[in-house]
Image (cartoon, rainbow, N blue to C red):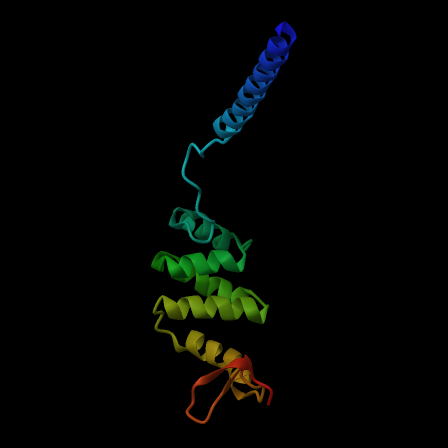
Length: 148
């Protein structure tokens, strides 16, 4: 009878120890999951606090298209003379088109920028490349890509 009690007591203690061990693992896992202490930082091209930096980079001539886009989205009209200067300096037609588009978005009145954007887009508009979407007789887009 004593032996049965020892076995029964031993299995109960072992089960309780396992349960406590598992509770410890779960509690440890839950407690170690930290929440960020500060809010997530916005991406560079979205954060308007980066506009002065973007203007400085464009002014220096060491800029990327994200800087031009950030200036245009922020409508930083103080950068218009800098963008005009870079438009005249750059040779890359894509960069030039991005600057011209930014100036048009910021309502620059000089027609040279609008005309440049139109000339840049004209080959795509005149192209015979089919639309990605096909259309039915009623003019509604069909779900599958166009196969013309």
